[in-house]
Image (cartoon, rainbow over all chains, first blue to last red; front, side, top):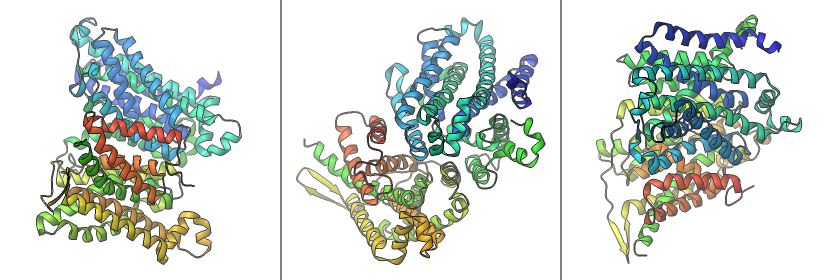
Length: 322
Length: 284
């Protein structure tokens, strides 16, 4: 298992691990909320990276899995009274199943068609959930407070959610690494570079793409359940915010797609930047245009993202910046 | 029955406009293999351009369309030069993200300038009654404009030198370059034309529906569905697909809630992709 001695993996893993640990040691509520948002985006960006970075397929609807899985998990916790752990897993599994079904249908096709479909899926999912009565229709669902009691009151429940989210974010990092280093991951890179050649060389492209999509969709479902449980309610406009899909995309590009550390740093940097912009009087109304500007500059001039740029510039650091 | 007929006719008239929007998308795809994700935002700009001319200069919206045509053509060429030229050879991921970034910038700036409060153009062109069907003047004129534009586009593509160059590049870019066609100009022109079609469609829509700067995304989605129905890269298919979708939108609300329309459209979209990805007309 020489793979585990790769310093690049440990840099990413320890970054997320220590970040969460600091919050747990300090035990401040405001710090936890900030860290929750950052870890959430780390998880979302890193899971999107499994499809987008490794396989080169843009998914504009990553947040659909966050929304649908979150809705389902929330429904299990709040309406059926399932334990949070099981419900979160349920949300993840549902997301994965939906991704598998969509993937089987659409991933036989090449890049551009897939991207089109992922834009449509967001609107369709929002419209579907808004009309779906068991999920509360357009008004959404509210948490049943007895669900918090089980974990020793609302305050304790929030800490528990945070710890679970932290573990999920770590799991995303580990899984991303395992996928990247595996034979399967090599197949994905081959698809990204040249799909036809990959298929001639024996990569089962449709199957591998679908698997990557499935893995990438599983985690948002988990994260969604935790997020909505923490918020105490879930509604269609909150669950399927197209803008959030975009932000996650910008994070991956900002940090560097296809790298392990890229999405983590990208999510962190973007969140901090947004936090600053929202309170700044000049930029608070412009932050969408500004993220667009950042994205355009990255696509045109630094396609490898921040971490990718460092890797190109300083080859010696490559071992560390996986 | 008395209810269905008027709503189908209404839907078909709107379908013409959908068709024009989708033609813009399909033209850009056909020529340069780029899916323009700034399409919806461009439509919204077309709406606002028509609105501003109407509200501030009391310009008839159909005369205003001339200004929209010129401005959007220029705008498209500029967008191509700034955001696309560098990445045109780099593959889907880059071009999708680049046009997407343009979309975010337009929407972000637009939200800042115009806010997201709904606007509408208070313009009436009378109406014609034929039996149970009432045809609203604005929709009739919009459909007429759509037909004229389609005809003009056809003539341009088939009987002028730049039009022929566009078709040549669309067929085979390398061969066209060998024949001395400056493909970079041609691509810029094609992108300008596609942007223009989107903006004009937006302008026409603004005469019969209220809109905000965010409205474009709904129409963009419809354009995708239409393009896939008609076959990506096929302008005639786009027009027929537009009529089909418009008619469908007319029929659906007569037997199920309107809010289900996007779900039905998306299911249709996926079905077409799975069963016949070249579109119902099956080009190439």
